[in-house]
Image (cartoon, rainbow, N blue to C red; front, side, top):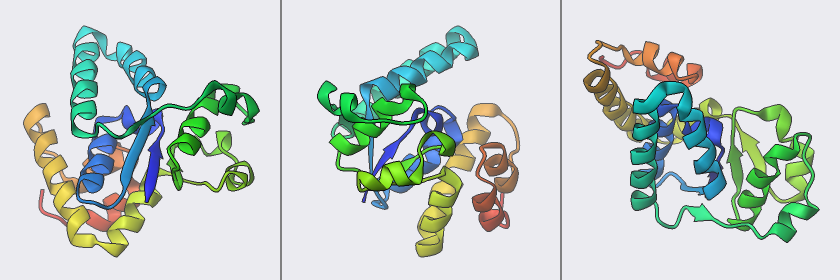
Length: 183
């Protein structure tokens, strides 16, 4: 399954690590466009100079780890598409150009299911998407979550608990499912 990741699910670190962690285990093939990555870089400005540098480094690492993930949509494709927010048409175009099955996004209202269905696509929020993968492969998702938790503890110097970390990352269903894991 090919999955286009919208900027809003790449920008938050824990959410990105969870999604790409399960992708790295073979659960799906991630896709994005250069513009999606550029939007992530611009969003990192809020974090200051360190955030900008970190996002730049992470974007390079992302490209190195997933060289086939970046898709290019021809301008003619974007020109024929419609979405409620014209600024999101590039996301739909990238999904179509990459032959994606699903767009994972937090912006449900900007990606109406009927419009996506006309292009053979569906959408999912990251929590439902990851929870569905957990239902099919609980050990795999739990292993990725344990790695993400260890990374969060190392980078923040805080003693995170699994449930709190995933809830903060806007993954409440997954947090509940994995909440009993040792922190």
